[in-house]
Image (cartoon, rainbow, N blue to C red; front, top):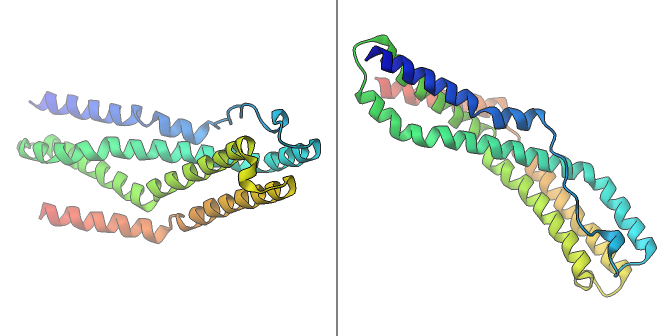
Length: 209
């Protein structure tokens, strides 16, 4: 039976590390923006001067779009990694607790699973993973929706070209402010992370007692 605990613990650690690959990749690998498709240059709705202004505006926001996309990919991978290892643990831990034998390894295995689960929950909440994912994805999606609407229905932004461009630029700035404010509000602090870990530590200590 001891060999089964060793095997199970080894498989758990191996799976834990292997499934971390998408998170590491998101941290190290920069996601490139995809081709925008038919853009401002191909639009029949705007004058050459307006197309120059639109292309220049896009070139200035392109860096922010790339950052939003990379952050969205990172927080998405963190979110799914946390969900993958915390939800099943809520079912597995009580079962493993009943299977503990009078040896240190079985207890250590249950402690390992519970500790990993507690750390992931603390990081997920402390880093505000879900809130950040929603903010970056919303900002990215909202911007491209504005671009598509401007290209397909420019009259929705105003009667004349000058009004359409001014309204579009204002709307894009609104999206940028939204993402910037959300990013600032969702910044994790050391105190919040410490509080989450302390709360989980007390909860686990109470359960062991």
